[in-house]
Length: 282
Image 1 (cartoon, rainbow, N blue to C red):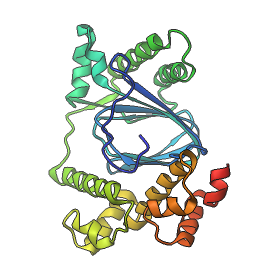
Image 2: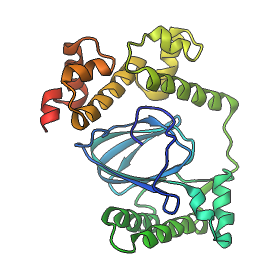
Image 3: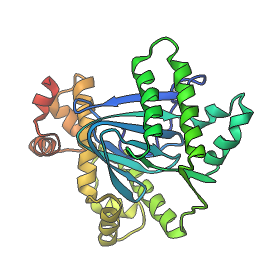
Image 4: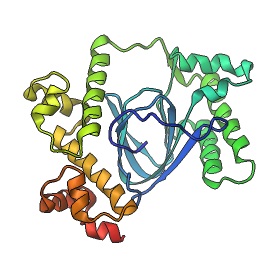
């Protein structure tokens, strides 16, 4: 979930229990949810603070208690502010196994015939209650929690259909679809090359745009300049390496595309509010 913007293609949980759980607070090396997408679905619970979420080109602010539902293939990111949040990434196909009475509903979601609401607030108390039970079970892992997880997911989707918490007949315009594909393409390029110096010309060439048009396009899509976004992703990678490897700060800087140690330290402090050394000790 928290790698730099790219297509996350890896197993989630196990075949029998395809659910992957994350608990994220300010100490997490992937505190900022970078742009990414995956074929699985995702459900997010905000425990405290606020999370500015972007789904494709739409942004909104989720507050404590809110729930976000992310459909398969949707490009998404989250910028936390004094926030603690949790995520479950799951394979919706798991709900097709040996349950024909329910599979007709699941198929409608999988085939994008219906689009589940993406943001549930306190106006949806039944949904929030079901999701709280779901996340609490994943968090505590008490005996039998697997039954609760499957049961609460069925409860969640049952509420979606019984209360009509979904949209029908939606389709992207060709222009919107192209813009999302272009953004995914350049994010994938950043993911593959962030360890090396990357010029603005190289980024714009990756999507066959002029540098001027590319900068405007990227800012419209992400509300950041290309280099701001790239440096933020490099710093997120550096955070992970600071707490999971024995590499020196200089090595980590160079391994993440920074050829100047002092610039790396300044950039790190800009995004994390502390120096790499203090972050590593913390």
